Image (cartoon, rainbow, N blue to C red):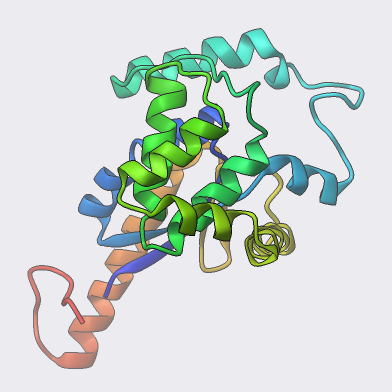
Length: 221
């Protein structure tokens, strides 16, 4: 039985990009499945009523130069490219809506990965034309994509996911949930991995006790 990990992320978030680069490996090694849930972190922050980037005292971790250097170090550690995000031509909320729209065609993860690659790996300052072209390159008809993207349903879905993250206790991106256990930030992946390992060990013991059999690996059910 696979363990489910809810992954709340932002397409313009450095640390979401870094964390997303490790998901395939984590899924392979920990018998888990990540459920990708794009949100716009600005809306989440507004719900909390505290803006860590502007309210006093501002923590040093939110200093722009520090975050840039920190993200570069993580990218070097992961051995992946990194450019500072350039999304001045497009609001991050639009990217979340576009990603959810791609999800209507079962291409949410693929769309997310394409956008992350463009922004952070290639350093492209993406615009609306690029966002739509990314969808069509994945095989989504442009007219269908733009119609859903501009619909109230897309906006309502984004608002619902943001409210969901907020009520579960999330305060930024990326945030991961395994049941009620929350892990915030790319740098918490090591703790998330440790927790997944503990769950797997417990499931393994339960499987042995309940079935009376010994398994070399977790049974796939």
